[in-house]
Amino acid sequence: MVRVAIVGCGKIADQHVQAVQRIPGSSVVAVCDREPLMAGQLAERFKIRGCFADVEDMLRATSPDVVHV
Image (cartoon, rainbow, N blue to C red; front, top):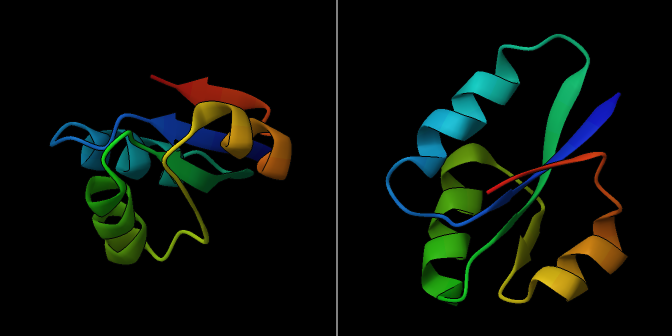
């Protein structure tokens, strides 16, 4: 399983999540945005467990293989 994190949860982030979901063997494990509301909304829309406002915290907590920025 390839563990993917998304940094930046603006409008285009939905497209990133959907692209990852189409790749067999991959999963979005976390999202991160300086604005917690943005991260929370993206996580809620796509049922993503990891939701962060700090990149370093996200990396430590989830150890993703890939980070989309």
